[in-house]
Amino acid sequence: MCRGLTLILVANALALLSVSCKDKSQEAAQQTEHESLPILARSPAPRDFGPTLLRIWDLSVEHYGFVDLKGKIVIEPQWEDATDFREGYAAVQRKGKWGWVDKAGLYIDQQLSKPVEFHGGLAAFERDGKTGFVDPTGKVVIEPQWELAWDFNEGLAVVKRNGKWGWIDKSGKVVIEPRWLGYPEFHEGLTAVQENGKWGHIDNTGRVVIKPQWDDASVFSEGLARVCRDKKCGLIDKTGKLVTALEWDWIWPFSEELAPVEREGKWGFVDKSGKAVIEPQWDNEDGFQNGLAKVNRNDRWGCIDKSGKVIIEPQFEEMSDFLAGLAQVIRNGKRGLIDRTGRMITSPQWDTCAPYRESDDGNAAVYWLVAGVLADKAEQPMFTGPHIIVKWLDSTGKEIWSFEHSKPSR
Image 1 (cartoon, helix red, strand yellow):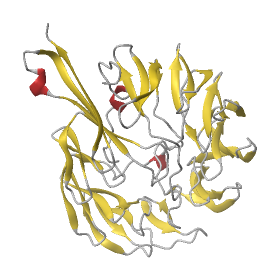
Image 2 (cartoon, rainbow, N blue to C red):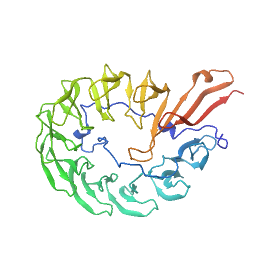
Image 3 (cartoon, rainbow, N blue to C red):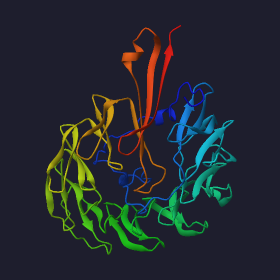
C-alpha cells in the first residue's frame, strides 16, 4: 500500500498524548510565564484550509511525507522531519534546516533552526537568538528583535524584552511597552498582570483597568475573574468590584455559567453570584464543556451534568477533554476513546492515542491517531519483532485509514 511504505507512523506516533488533568493547587498564575492558560472559545466557525493531509513516516527512506484521507501519497516522503499542517502549512526539515510546505507541496526554504507554526496568517520564528514574525510567502513582516514572542491573540502578540512582557500589533508596532509580568494573552479585552508582587488587570491599550492589589488574579472568563488575598479567593467583575466573598481555596475560570471551586480539598461548582450549585464533593474536576464536566474520585475520572448527576461513572485512570464529541481515556495503562454517553468507540488497547485539528477553530474537524503493538501476531513464529498497527479515525471514531507492519521471519 502507498508505494511501498514499509512502516507508517505519524511523527513519532505524535508522541503519547498527555491527558493527565492538572493539579489545581498549582496553576500557571503563580508563574510569570504561564505555560498553561485556560482554553477559551475561538472563532465561531472553522476556516477552510483545504483537504486534510496526514503526516506519515516512510521507514524505507526514513523521511516524512503526507497522505490524504484515502491513504494516497500527496507529498512524497522527502523530509528529515515535519510537523502537522497548521492553517494550510506544515513545517519541514531538510539538511537540518526548517522551512514549510503548502498542501500542493510548494516548499518555502527559510533555513531556520526551529519549526514554525502559523496562527492568523503569521508565524513566530527565531533567527540569531531573536524572535520575529513571517508570513506564508516567507516575507518577514516583523523583524526578529524580541527575546521571545507568542502567537497573536485578540489582535496582539505578547513579546518579551529584558524579562518583561509587552504587546505588539500585526504591523510590529509596540502597543504596550514591555514592563509587565503576568499572563501573556488577552481574554475578553483584558489580561492579568503583576507589579511589585501584586496582581491587577490592563486593557489592550495598556491602560490599568484594575489596580494591582491582589495576591493572585486570573484572566477574565464570561465577565468574571478570580482574585485571591490571604489564601482565599473570590470573583470580581470588569470594574474590579468584588462580586463574591473571598471564601474559596481556589477558583477555576467560568465555562457555561459555572466555575469549579475548591474548599478543604474538595471540589464543586458555583454560579456567577457565588452560590454553590454543586457542593464540593469531588477530589478534582474540570470546567463544563457542552453540558458535561470531568470529575475525579479515588483517582478515577468520569463526568457529571449541570445538575450534578453522574453521567459517566468515575472509572478511568486519566481522561482528556472532549473534542468533537470524543474523549481519550486510559484504563490499565492503555488508551481508548469514548463518546459523551461513556460508550466505548475504541476500547483501551492502544499505546498511542492523539488528536489532530488543523486550527484553533472550535468547530474544526478532529482526527485521532491510534497506534500500538499487537502481541498476538508478534508472538507468531512467522514474525520477528513487533507487529505494529496505526490507524486514523474521524470524529465519530470511524476508521478512515490504517496500516500494519510486521517483520517476517526468514
